[in-house]
Image (tube, rainbow, N blue to C red; front, side):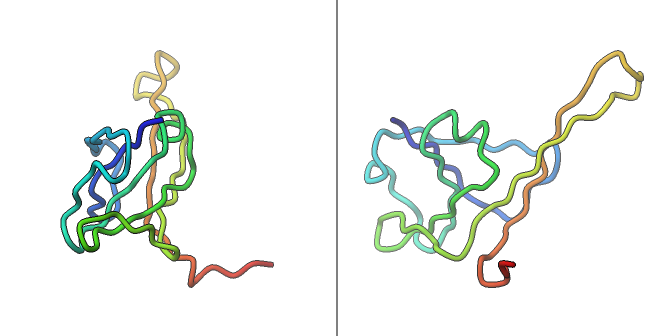
Length: 103
């Protein structure tokens, strides 16, 4: 299994590009101190997951944040040419578990 790691810089807009670094072990990645990162455990999770775990760089290692994650929403829409083609969009928002209430 490989890990896909990219810095998290706020919320992404439709059309923004994220470049991931691929490593075999989390310990192979040397994070910047205090920088937040999005981490996927495998390519399939990167492509299909609705939530993205957040990590932070501490003491030269990645530490998982238990209260913060990225929520991803997917959608399809039509192009300006009607039915001639379709576009796919992804909306992402950084959320915290501390403000979530369960019914």
